[in-house]
Length: 316
Image 1 (cartoon, one colour):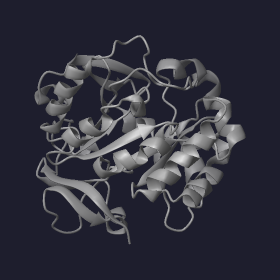
Image 2 (image 1 turned 90 degrees about the vertical axis):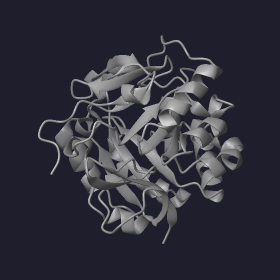
Image 3 (image 1 turned 60 degrees about the horizontal axis):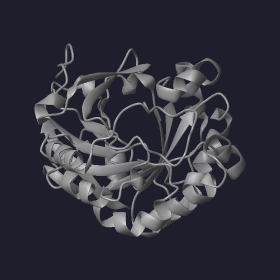
Image 4 (image 1 turned 135 degrees about the horizontal axis):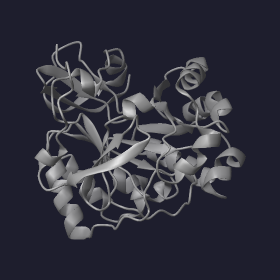
């Protein structure tokens, strides 16, 4: 049994529990108090999951905030628009305050590379100051040296892997990346941070899905999320040769035999449709066109700027 932090609330008259490790939202099988709550992850994993479009609410279940464009790696499948300007420290503090009071259940800080941000612990502390669970998505290069500092303010961390060994992973991310990411995961686990491995399914990497799951178990991660590639940013240039179609992605992930205690999931492009992202320029973006593009909606001024259109036929 592993007891860790989740976020609970009632949205659209439906009780919900959000998992900051898997990014899944569940309907609890019992009464759970609202706010940041400690729950057994095995119990939560047994509850039904629910998608945003199924709930009559304009509040996103979770979102991603990318305060940095900067990154120490140059991955060809990167989703980021590197032409965006970065907000300064004062603006980042303001955005954190707005997000913290937004009633969103989960906030993930991504990038660029978020561990380049010295103020990351302070921003995470603000984001979790109300009811939200907080996480971070990283390439893992700087995780070993920052794990102890981040552990008290981080509910989960996701580390990107493109293969189960140095040869396959470093092909995409550069020499030394695998060694640094593995050391980072081990350090996070040692300091009690739940770790989820993230792997983008591409034609060149999908055949290693089982080995990535085995690696995750060896490192002490709680699970693996396989992500369908989104042809956004730099990744658009790889789509013709590397995109894995829906049926193939489902078949690949279903073929994975998770080691005992490890949970494996597929994040499809369908699930990524409409996802809310706050980018480094302070604009609210949504994934559009079946998550094959991303579109700026408006500047983030108040929490209301995060609101989604109500889904047709939502509610129960």
